[in-house]
Image (cartoon, rainbow, N blue to C red; front, top):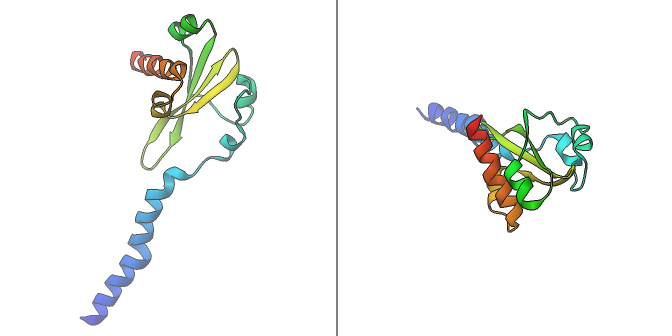
Length: 126
């Protein structure tokens, strides 16, 4: 009986516990190409880092409000157990912000919050 308990403890310690810890940390891994993205880079420069957008769209409402050409592209970012929407936003072909939608929505910059609102509406429409 004691041997079975030791085997069970070993199973938990060396198999199950590491799996749980690994799965909770997986969302912190960053794909290498996103390490080279910098604010101010052009649309083409960002794409040259190996980032492949799944969807690209221009935000007409925000563009009119801020008198700029606002363009956004979406990729599917692997996180813990799903692939979440991850966005790159450009104003006049210059990268201004990138991240998950909640990062845009919580930003202190009103323009980024407006971009997030229109991005989300565009996703719902498609």
